[in-house]
Length: 205
Image (cartoon, rainbow, N blue to C red; front, side):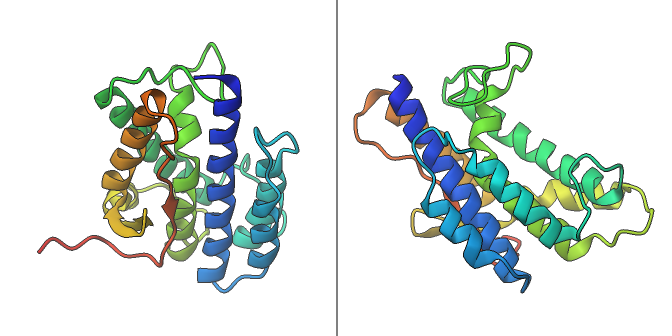
């Protein structure tokens, strides 16, 4: 993949992530969703202005309270980290299924990271974890219990909208990685990325 193509893909990923962060704030009736949507529209190829970090600086204090940082030792961060680890594993597994090398990223390029590409492509799905944690986890010095871990693991069965249809997150991730693989060999193939919707666990008929 050419560098310009990688930069355009990263632009799409960051725009989708920020839009989903805006939707998360909107669903929780928190302020700032309009500002994030406006920021998403300004993301350029390769995100040279680091809009992803700008969005995070606005988003997390509104979501979890002024003074909150992703480095703090607290239950909220423990839950976010666990949920995102489940998400990362799901993306990495699907990359392997489609014959892709997870260590070769489009933006992340650490030689010490075996999952650079998974870290790239999981980004737009992160706000689902944020939404669940903000909706259900009450901070109060508690610990990451087995029950909470099970609930976070089950987020892969929650629903997102993608390509105009509703899918379980695990299925949406599969479609996204398949579209990425197609884009390596077919010019003009776009990357399928998710849209956040209200929390809903998939129900089997």
